[in-house]
Length: 179
Image 1 (cartoon, helix red, strand yellow):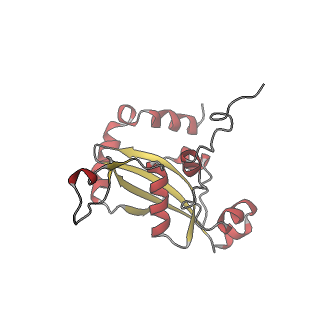
Image 2 (cartoon, helix red, strand yellow):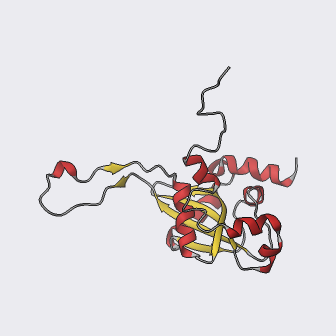
Image 3 (cartoon, helix red, strand yellow):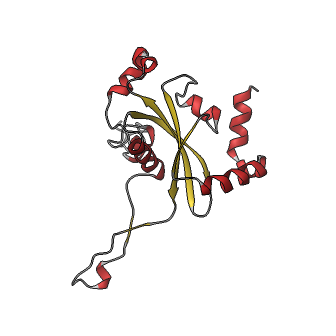
């Protein structure tokens, strides 16, 4: 087995394979702001498989999200209490929401992809791979140039997590098979 396969196996059960590292990470990450720019990916195998390259023009962001149901905002005024405070089930996954929030913090960058890093009782953490639209390395790469030209990929559900929530990831999963 190569290095990336060992990394992939270790990240399948992070609390069993690396419990001390993961606990220390979570303690430190809880004190950080919700959006943090990082220098290196925590999961190198996953980042590389999603298109990350260790060259200029790539930006990595760790995004924290609160877990739990999303509540409808409280309305003041003459309405009965039954109509207020209902939990909402969004069509987007937490991962898609993390991508949108990261793209808001870095308006000059475009979301390439993202992956799960950790979770505890209160939070989820995702690492979002962003590319700088104006960087010469990105402009000279034909594949990345095409992605950089798309504005608001995360907001329009064009990333992998966004396509999954729109039901576009598996071609034949939802469609009836005609014989």
